Image 1 (tube, each protein chain N blue to C red):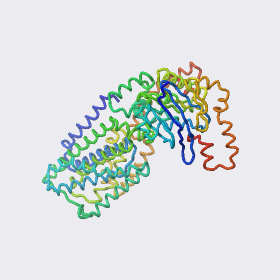
Image 2: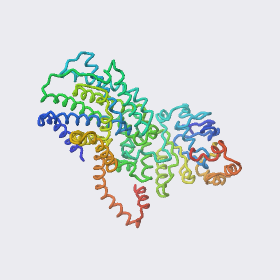
Image 3: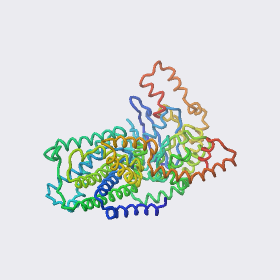
Image 4: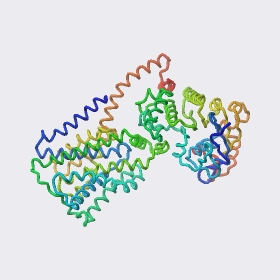
Length: 347
Length: 265
């Protein structure tokens, strides 16, 4: 795909997202759109650590939930009135979540691979338990309310939608900047082989922590908007393991480590998941969700975007292969080992 | 004769044993020095000590007069000592261009990086040709060339090359040694460790024979090659080492370290 086509694609998606609430005004549709955007943002911010650095976190809702609580508590503490003004506090919530993520990331990132996955799950449960037990701060199991905006039912979701869209655009932009920077190059090297990365001069510890903290800060802002939109935050809706897994699953489906992958994965899975939970009885949709997870891992282990990329590349390189083989015929070489050798000698 | 690297009476090793036992070696600027010797003589350990992966227990390592024996690998990299490791060290899922860029990771200015990349791509055309391919899709010989290209990103003052011919088919091996010879002709200072002593010594200005963690012989590459006693040493295990393995009644911890440090050396 050429660069121009890629930019056009992103612009198209952006314009479509901007116009969506103007075309589809049904509040039920908009609430699904809001959740979809939330997942686009979460999957994209998850991708900065999980996709670029290969550190698979299943605990991003720890920061999603922390952001929600921090938002509710801050608005209450500063007596912020309902309406649009709370949105102005979002950057502060992002910074606050990022700061809290520093010591947590420092500890969690001492582990790798499966142990890291487990530690992130534990981290999420610790945050949930804290929300439940620090009653004087969080309201415990009963939860914490937000100031209620005086918006009509038809209008209600629009401000949340646009606030979420803003944070989502910021998340994707941050992911893009990270990917293009030395930080991104270092993170990709860490994903490939952390010891080699260290040997070549990548400050692996601080880079991983940076990715962890950036990812957490973005998730905190997303969680804050979500919590405000449902007006009430309690341990189960704030720190939901399904949200953690959903974000990771969507990134995997679209293609972890690519910029567009998590966006695509979330655009496909998030509405499907919401629809499914409406029409399928009880918790049965969770079983279908699990089956989908297995199917993705089995059929598209690298995700949609990289798989398409592979297809395109193998189509264009087939031509080159034919030429190479012709060359070998002239040399009278046909067996595979020789082909390999010749490739090495060619230049 | 200016020595850019001086190793003075160095002792180093793993666990309870020493692999280097009082090694003293000078590497002269602008020359290709080739270390040969039997398995376990300490060839690769010398490189580890110079690159900071292993700190000497005793003795001194000086680079351009400055002591580097206790520096971290990263700090030593910043001094201008770059290693091309023995095993395949490219990031196989990343592109060739990204791999080479990573070689200049410690450069602080973006413009400097781009300029170095341009120079390296001119020097190693394969980097430009295969820039967007993943490193893992290259053949072994091509990967070795890209590793050299990556090392050149920092314009190293001293290039450490560990067994570059390892696992390569003879014709590709030729290509690797030709490249080394070209780098030498360009005035690079190279410290080469090579199991295939003939190939290594043929292109070397200075040949050094290591045995049991000490320098046994040092001379011009051609002289070392012509030395009749060298054949016995470099063609696998030396007579002394063999005797030792046979004499040992049962492998104790120290014996294991002394007689079979293949993996570690």
